[in-house]
Image (cartoon, rainbow, N blue to C red):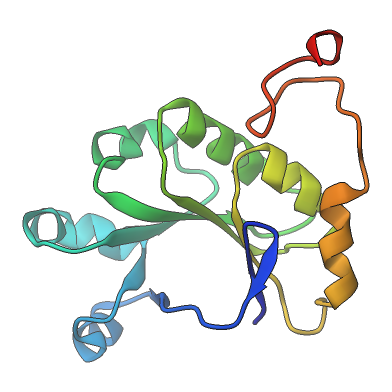
Length: 161
């Protein structure tokens, strides 16, 4: 699955997605993006340990639950289960407003026509399905040259630009 980070294709992703305790036990010390349910179960142990923490959150999670953890998290993966469900845009924006400086990674239904909007909301990494990816997708970030509203990438409204 191709991964874009900061609008560039990245060949090596050292993060592994983990959904259950069996996978976690087999992983060893490799960096893992833990499913929210697993992260919640292991939370105290994870916070007590050293190292990077990453979590994949469902798109119906209130990100207020993450605010006490933001200093410790390196990656928060937000989910786009379908084109019609854009709650992850709001999650990303709220995480940035809360001061999260780590990577926000989009997964799921990541498509060309939403890449620019994901970036504007503060998402800086996008996992794209192999069958949807083309190198021309990188052009999506420059397709819109003028934005009326302020956003994470440029907080100034058009009359201040």
